[in-house]
Length: 74
Image (cartoon, rainbow, N blue to C red; front, side):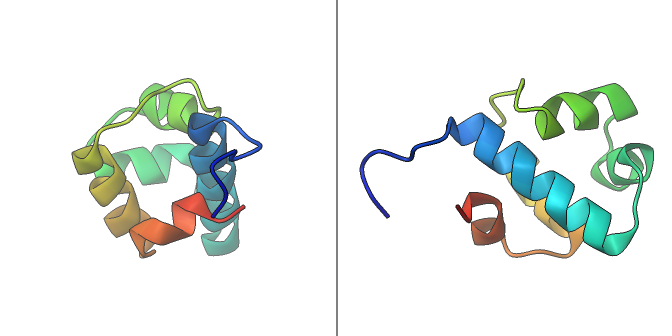
């Protein structure tokens, strides 16, 4: 991993969230329910508008059955 990510980290996580969510055929609402947040919050994460905590990243990983590192794939 380079020191220059080339993409905003929030957008990178959001882009990978979208990729993983689409691969599972889940809606933002379904992911939000699994995470314990509303659809709007899940959507804001996916759009890279939220600077999420490690706890939120863990909940997202659990909701999408993905390893946390998958959200940092460039």
